[in-house]
Length: 419
Image (cartoon, helix red, strand yellow):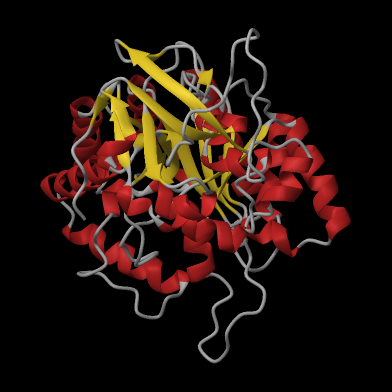
């Protein structure tokens, strides 16, 4: 790829039109059928200068550029634990059982080592921000949080790490939960929990409202594992919407998974999506783990796999990101914190079209906005000089040749990542 780099601070590349902002003095250049346009990119002192359309007559680029990307939902504390705690049934129940077994042997040093490995891979492969949920609300709190807070400080300025306290809803009603919320707020984290079909009734409603009140009081966002199920469609979302009517909050509320919404009739899904948009709910779709775990039957291949109805929610005005979720842990044996591999594997499952604005947004601008990052990922004057460069001139090349990438961080090229 080095021969394609004109100089240390200058490249010619194909850029997705939806991720490009040009000066008004420039005419909008022509695009390929895949929405790619040839651009000159320059940078100085870690920031992009004004992008320029490639002048006519010059050779066309042989590389494609994306901004450094974002993974809005991962689990660093349990990453790379599959070998010692496999879920050979491939079921949700099997994952939960193996996860609980892993907790019994967990230590701060183990979590730190796994997390450091994950952060190194994520950084080298082109991620600039990661939001990790941390199993909380039990004996594993101290070891996990100690390790992840260490990582957050260690990687500050290179790879942003957001932390979510993933705890049973009832935990937030306890004195320990009240103290934990203060700790989470101090590190800029979020409060989380699980809301699934087994959790119904006034007791859970009260716990949910206490969580919302606690988050709002401390200025913490909320990120819930919700409706990760192949039954009782949208029961968690319905309960959340009712709780928000009684306990409105000013902090952002994110709904991760929402897989069972796909089981709703189209008209019902449309009405629910509109209510979600009015409540300003954000969604993070996790197609890889959900395709692996849900609707599993040992005797048949499932013909219908519950997953977040991304395009239907987008049409209702809901912001939706796609994230990687689990990496080599009891919940999913694959993954490797690689944003390009995530795109290449998630796109067939979701049937998103990356050459369309709404098809690309879940991996780029929507993910950045849900994490409330200072940069939305659009290449414009003054934006960070943070790029992923891949050989080729099409989306097909980007999806097939991800291992040939070169990553630019604050205007400096990283050494190639060795898998």
